Image 1 (tube, each protein chain N blue to C red):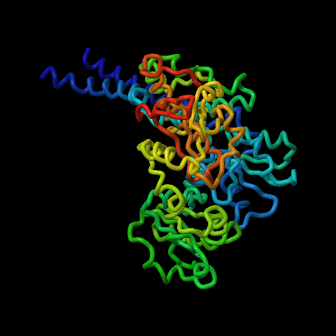
Image 2 (spheres, one colour):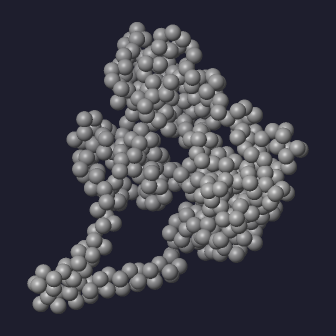
Image 3 (spheres, rainbow over the protein chains, first blue to last red):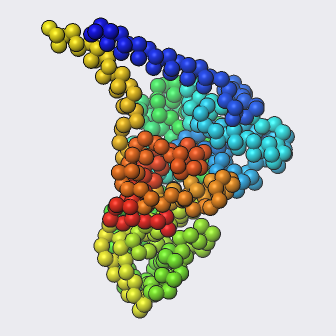
Length: 375
Length: 117
């Protein structure tokens, strides 16, 4: 009896394993939802170059914030599938251009669906790299590219990152560079290895003069050959940084004008309630206060200087938010104001001084208010 | 002696049960409920824009379930009832945890049950 129970267990395990194997075999077949023109890594490698050849576009169909911004195939343009229709203008005008879509691997449908949309628009040379970003990263020596937002985020978090300017020192770096970057010109890379960190796990971010510049890519390959495991390239490079963040010292972004006064609250994006109360009392014009409750609620009472943009209408009116003044969202509980905060972070990420009141608030007709309790 | 003979099959049987259930029984950690509310609505907006649903507003409100039910749904990753399967499939784990925090935080038996207003 005991022996039969043992064999029964083994049989069940084997059966489970067989089921797994047959399932794997099934997935090896081309799924019905696959786009009709699939290409492999070799094809992508042939067509991706720095700078990108004319009439070729590599398109990352994954979501921006959660995927593309964390790393993508170098030279890829991001057109998330869910926003494809909004960003059709990013596609080449020439309908015969080669478009290669990819997303998060063979199980991901986004690139296939985007490819179909492109074909429906009249593009005649559309392919899907079904292996996608995971397949790209499997190849030895391959690295990811990242956008400026990635670099900025790691700066703000004070991550253990080494930012490396691969351009010539005198003619480029000395005339302007990303704050905190060290100069290791690609031509002097081998002579300056002592500038690299000893820990091969350290995040190395290489950049140079933008999408047409190969120097950062060449240095990144050299660093990987030396055994560095966490190497990325900020391919848009210094021109992108300068246009996005200016020449200011990054440590001061958002600090000089406001954050020293606008003390943050406990939750991400929230303003310290006491600071908010004081500012509204002493200098309300200093803030652009947006009450995101419905119009009927707003009519019953709100802050004297608040404007009403109900959260349901905020996306359509998001351009009304000023870039030169701290924006603070308020509502009754923090739910709608919190939602508004994240909407701005998503849709107008260039606005740095945005906050919400994470607390229950009551408003009176005369413009007075009470912060009842912090959540 | 009896126990010694009994051990191997108990071990394999336990291993088998572990294979079966371990993946689905791990409880989900709640994320950021404020961000979750935005993400939840964004999912349906995207779904609406591609014509898969009638309204850009989510069809299931937080107060449609108790906290225990939301925990069960998200632990089992049983998202069929939400519709918009493509958008749900594309959500990174962090966003799923944020949505869970929002729905769980405003469940029917929570201190602040909510419609998706």
